[in-house]
Length: 317
Image (cartoon, rainbow, N blue to C red):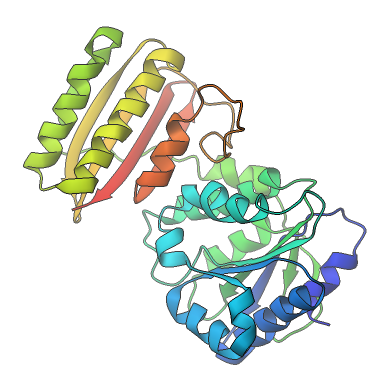
């Protein structure tokens, strides 16, 4: 039995979220492949969402059994960490009957994630615990103990209630587990935009804000679907500001490091840390704006506090 599988027998509740630390390819496969095979043997649905190079290793190690596993390249499916819970984890878990054990290997943090992306990654890992509380799901998250910085490994202990140390030693409870503190710590003010097109808006100027964003996005090099996504994100975020953020806000658009960025600031405060990360219920009316932005943007960062809320999203040129 793998160390991750042992967690299914603990009395801590139906949801398990272990971090698996590995130092090389062998430890990676020893930690993930038995976990997958044990799930398949038990008749449990299994998904593996990891970066492409790791995905190929797991697929090859599984052989014919890989055909019965949902395989996703996390570099694509989880490019924006904000879409992983609704678009990857919940999408897979919710497709199966309530109460049926579901297993997922998810690796949202890998060497090469940028410093700009990382706060969204670690907040995602912390929020998994709230998003799946009480669900019959196990999400195993591998961490490269050699290539990832020390602060990233420390954060993994804070966002996972159990950890599996490198070297296939038994799983143990994390003494540093504090997901709410992690979400708060990475609720960082975003650096100011340089040379941005700035458009203050109110309810009556929402159409003009969308047109201004499209015109500026086109001028900065966006075309096709990316330009349409920028316009849609602008419409959703500015409408949310008018409805929930005090009736007005400021839109900014600019280019940076191969992306066009869209930022909306308003005077409201977000109180739900899972906003934009829950799939809507079938009978839900409204509440889909930030979820839509998470699903179409390459990255979304949020800062909220007493002074208001800033939502910034990135679109590749």
